Image (cartoon, rainbow, N blue to C red; front, side, top):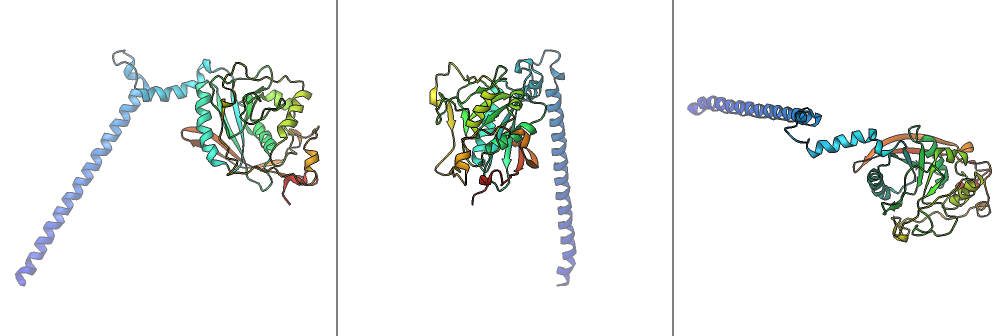
Length: 317
């Protein structure tokens, strides 16, 4: 037993030395990995900077560098034109559609060389959905770096690359025209996707704020366009008909709010001569910059205000 007790410290000492040796080896490996990582980052930075390709002997930079540089230089590329689109998306609780919409539209507009930013106006109050008021908010909050806007439904995706999304200099351009929209085909329809310069939108005093719930705000806006003497333009030469757009709304799963409360049924067919941008009341609760599958967008969480003496149908009894 005494012999055994004398050997224990020796054995313990050897185990400790072996442990220290292994620990040092781990540190060495970690240090070596860090050095290799730093060298790799330096090499990538040098290769993407273009300094290695000035002598003409090493060819072009790798594709990854070309893609990164193209995204940056697109801002200064004159072939993209001088105008910038604010893609206004009135929104509430349709996140599955938004996840599809943002990357799809970002890719579609980049392919057409349309400078743009996607602005999602998310209604977070407890009133009924008000598409027109949210578009008014989008117009006011979209910033001075854009000069025209698209009133764009989140459930409507363009499938034809020939569709025009450029600056509508001559007048409002109804992309989702009655001849092409998969659902709505009446002559005065201007919903779905409508392009306007900010000047023309302001000339119309925006859209009426009286339309709580689903529908009819577009029909009232058509009257505003006529009152402002703005000529409406629509696509020509599009041969894809009702298959021009993909409508991704599932009406069986998500019912539209089509209820008519109090005197709303009578009021919905009237022209709102004074309402619009001038009597819009809202608060921006927060603003978030998001990236969805590589596509940037701005989410503006908005609380609308309602004068229940004027529009008691903003709430459901």
